Image 1 (cartoon, rainbow, N blue to C red):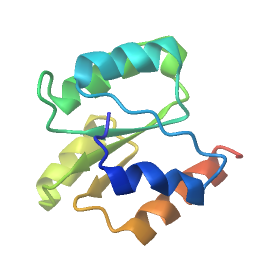
Image 2: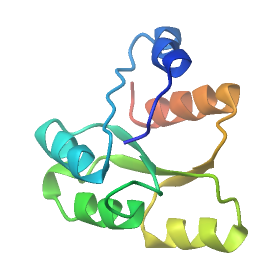
Image 3: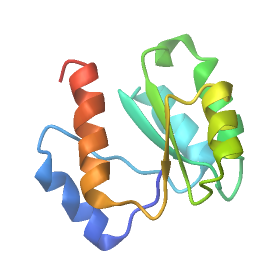
Length: 116
């Protein structure tokens, strides 16, 4: 459910075992995750149709997504907002703009935790 620009779409070549799927809004992201459950979901908190927190709650309610790690993406780096998102059920919170080396390290860490 993270949006991508052209240069970001080419970046998965740096991690050939990682498959990137995108959705344009919360509803299509929920449908995609339910149809083909991901191991990791990067979820923008400011979606055009549904609040990212609500999307996370809907995904967490589905038993088929129990093993999915959900990372919040937001430009908001306020400590209280980060803490609230983590307390609400996100596995991690990454701030935008994405620092790409940190992003890849985070993907690698989550992949290692999943045994990939």
